[in-house]
Length: 88
Image (cartoon, rainbow, N blue to C red; front, side, top):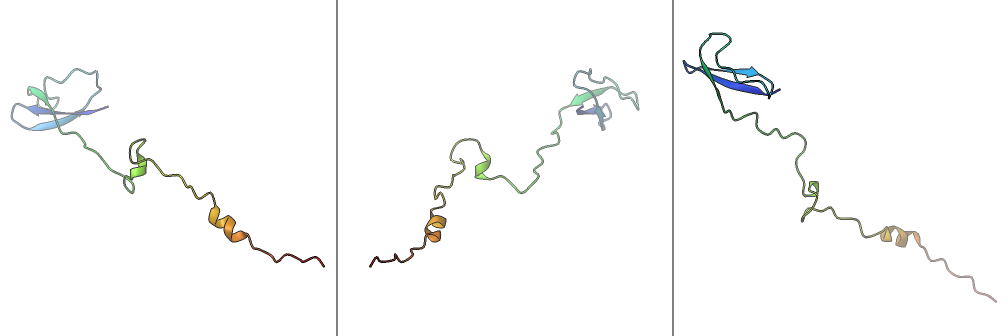
């Protein structure tokens, strides 16, 4: 449920937790003054975690690169040439 901000006739403000489909308040529940719902900046964006990376995006220049070496270094290192036995 969103929190709405209201301004009283005397200029003071208060917040009220209401459902989206609820009708806006016309008077303050504490003082009985007439109130008007005002547009507030909201909570803003909260960034959590270590950050954003180019690879976080679905398309564009930020596509992730796949490895193309297919283990070629590993296979070349593991192949050792043994001297061939000569036939006599």
